[in-house]
Image 1 (cartoon, rainbow, N blue to C red):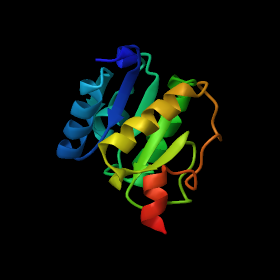
Image 2: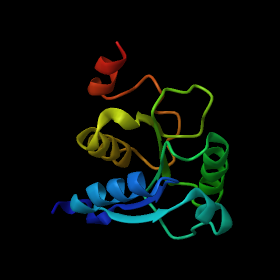
Image 3: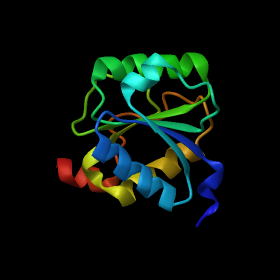
Length: 139
């Protein structure tokens, strides 16, 4: 177990299997994780302190946009990571857009990358700044 236990993560997913798998990967690495569906989050936004919010590719882009806006309003310094199965230039407000098909080890690297950046530093990432494994797959 690493020192990751100091990092609190909110995982928003509308696919129980994806959400559970992601939660288990993160917990095994020592992260504290709370998992909710988009419907649960929209009905009762979390005001608890989170260092990172991960919005799954299973969340409809319209709901994802509402969720990121609510996160920024209630938890202005939280870092927000969006997992996507395809690059989308239409979504914004995320600290990192990440290819969900990259696998658990790349996810963990991305979480570390986002977590190491100053909170509230939006704009430091873009859909073009993928992990090398992602870039190789796209070329």
